[in-house]
Length: 101
Image (cartoon, rainbow, N blue to C red):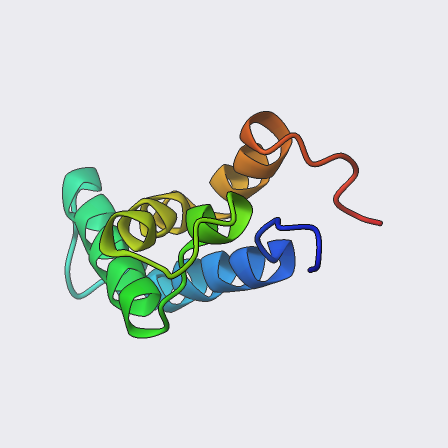
């Protein structure tokens, strides 16, 4: 996007990929993870993804230049929260209007 806003499609896609990939583990009957373990695993996976691909939505949104570890980690926390968290970020924080256009 040329507007200085993070690519909403990329964030939603990454969030869905992480949710669906982890659902294979979390919904397995082999191991029963508690909520804390699930959240920690989701954060770890999202952090590895964001750091590996240098995906920092904050640096993109605020045109602050190169991605950095803090921005990648905060982006990962939003992605780990799932697709609802991504949509809330765009609506409430970044003031992005209708996301279906």
